[in-house]
Amino acid sequence: MPELPELEVVCEVLHRRLIGQTITSVQVLQPGGPIVVRDLIHEGFEKTLAGAIFADVKRRGKFLIFSFKSPLPEFYLVINPKLTGRLQLSTPSEKKIPKTQVLFNLGNGAQLRYVDQKRMGQLYLSRDLNTIPDFARMGPEPLDISLEEFKARLKPFLGEIKGVLTRGDFVAGIGNAYADEILWEAKLYPYIKRSKLTPEEIERLYSAMRTTLLNSIEKVREEMGENIHLKPREFMAVHMKTGQPCPRCGTPISLVGANQRITNFCRTCQPGGLTKGMVTNLSK
Image (cartoon, rainbow, N blue to C red; front, top):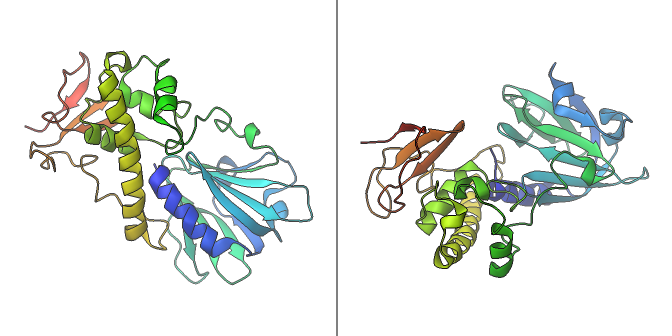
């Protein structure tokens, strides 16, 4: 799933490449198009967007928000890529990635493509962002809150700290992968209950969140370039690095599968006891 660092860089590239460009036409390609495309203004997805000029692109949590210069009443195109959604900038002659769902043909001859292998993401047309599922309930951006606000927002949550980090109503934009990275940076066991964290550990978590996200944005920016359909994550310390040595202590990275989610961590740097009933596959 694209998370804050990837989507932040995608947003930067799209801002450079799209602002001022006209959408000449839109093509919904796949039979599952109605699953992916959600027209909340009920005036026709392709019809509404044809002729619209990109005015701005912003990121909010795991959503990309496009606004337009148009004689029509103001509307937004909002993309929530979820697990497998990607955007691609290409030329019409370039071979389509399998499961390309939607094509936006641009006035400069380029195409913006939405690709989604499992058709789990959505593209919304809306005049009110709060009508988009999960949008209104998002918490603040994790890089925009102070330590004191972080502490206050954390207090009501009682569950395991990794689960709290990935809740969009706590902070927006952190998913499974970057939660692993943040907790490794903070030297915190992913399954420790929030109520068991000491004040010092909470401060460490806040610092690790900021450091990890800011550093990751820089690394993604370097490795992604203009290829916004890529998801560079080789630089990560622990996520999807099962069995590889921890960059800090050399212990093989462990993997735990629980609640249909993969968690990677270092048992030496992030000590803690496994919860009974977890499905585990720890490297020896």
